[in-house]
Image (cartoon, rainbow, N blue to C red; front, top):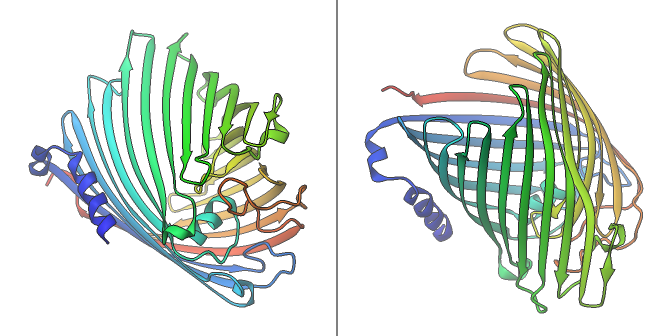
Amino acid sequence: MKRAAIAVSICLGVAPSAAFALDWSLRSTQSETVELNDNQFLRTSPAGSVGSYSTITTNAEALTPTSKFDFDADGTYKKYWGPGADDTASEYLNYGFKGHYEETGKDKFNREFVEASWRQQSTALALLNDLGVVTNASGFLDRLTATGGIDRSLTALDSLSLLATSTFTSYEPSSGGISFTDTLGRANWQHRLSSITALTASSEAELLNFDNASNTRIQIYREQVGIQATLSPLLSFRGTIGAAYLITDGGVSTLTPIGTNGISSSTSSTDADWIGDAVLTYKMLKSTTLTLLANQTIGPSVVGSLFKRDSVSAGLSHTINARSTLSFSTGWNRQISTTTTDYVSTSVTYGYNFTREWTAQLTYRYLHRFASSGTTIFDPITGTPTVSGTGPADSNSIMLVVSRSNTLLPHGN
């Protein structure tokens, strides 16, 4: 609770005191989820389980003609029952706070902002959410983040965005894992060629410092160029491509075997590979939209272990009427670290709005994990597992989510 109080103080400190006398709003959302799954944790010997997830989120927002302050808080409790949850943690907590303050100029391309957040979650939940890895890890993982950025219109055709962020990750108790700091700086430039087309370029540097015996340092440099195009009122495209270059000192990167120019020794390694993403959106009908996505990324997980991730997916959303929607998605993704693991998934979701406050979603999802290549399942730097199993596994789940949103204080009062 002491750390939570510090985080709240930091978040509140980013807003000017005058904002408290101006236009405030207060909103909250509560949701309850029940999931039936025949293999929740993708075990090679499947067994069924029932999951219950309770979530509450709140947002307080203050507006002036040229500034905005948001304070967000959320909390989630997860509980699993049944033979599928045996021999693993069955209860998880996840909660946090975030404060965001920004000032805007004459348009959306001229603004500056600062942000601070704190989050605590069960270490086992952090690994499950980010990597799909099931562990019996106890204790909590804490993340304290500070971020700042500037957006500027340089000319009528050119805009520049600068961002800097740093996250300190620690464990309670301290023996639960290796604490580290992840600091990142990014510059994005955009040039409009016409009313429908723009070119983009970005440069990014990321530094990870681990508090381990060898004081491991990982430097990641990413350079990308891209294009954005609104080809018609019904069709749009966005794509970027570039390269990532990694330097690891005081430890060997798990990504060295997959790189194009990997060089390693017993205490350091370098690696390079391409990265990119593409999104194509097509409004097939007035009420139906198709989205195609593909990307390849290289970066740290929530616990600092490095991953290369590839994915290709397709989504189709259809508005049936004013109250109900239907969506379909399918995709493939690959995780590369100490092992290489492929996944495919398909899901169908039906959503219904009972009232302005009450909504419900019913989802069926199929997930398949292929057999992994590689036998080492622990990251050599962080000591955390990178995959929960190396054999093939399937799961089928049915999930019902019921949510209620409340506007306790609307803007304008």
